[in-house]
Length: 249
Image (tube, rainbow, N blue to C red):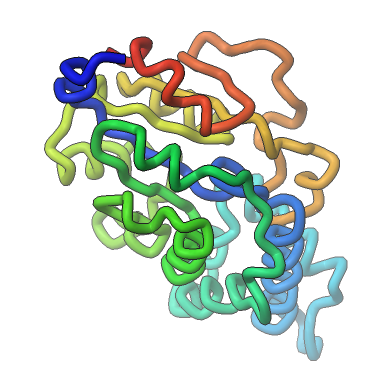
C-alpha cells in the first residue's frame, strides 16, 4: 500500500469495545450480569420484600435490555438518581485482568491503521479505560466516549441512538460518510448505515449460547449467516482491517 494513499487517509474509525476488541462474552459479561442482578435485587424490591429473588432480578434485567436497549436506560427511567451507582456496581471486578480474553497483536493493528480513532462503548468509562490499558491500545484513541457521556439534553442516549450519533458527528466535526463504525451489534450498525456511515461487522466473539443469559443478549435473536445489505464489510477479526482499506476510500 503506497505511502501517498496512507497520507491522504481521512476516514475516522469508530470502534466498539466489548465483543469487538475482546471476548466479553466469555467471562466479563457473566460477571456484569451477576453484578446487575445483585443491584436490582436490592433497589427494585416490591411489596415490602427484603429483596428481589435472583431469578426475578435476572428477568427484570433482561426485560430492561429488551425494552430500552440497555439495562441502564431502564434504571435511569425508574431510579434516575441511582443510574451512576448502578453503572459503578455493574462494572465492579475483583480481578479484571483474569477475566480478559483477546487476540494478540491489537497494538500492531492500531499502529498500522491510518486515520483518527475514537472508542464508542455502551459500557462504563472506568471499566472501558481499564480494558484499553490491559489490551495495550489506549494510546491510539484520540477520544474515549463511554455511556456516561452519551447524553443528549440530559437524557441517556446510548448507541444506537440517532440523537447521540448526530451529536457525535457535530462534536468530531465530520460527515457521516467519513466515518467507519466497527461493531459486533447489527442493530447499531444498521442505524449507523442509515445515517450514512460505513460499517464493519466483527463476528469473532458472537456466541449466542453464551450471550443469551448475560448482560447483552445477541440483539438479532439468531446469528446472521450472510452479510446484510447495511454491512459494508464482515470479518471475524479486527486485525484484518488493514487488508481492506481501499474499500473505505
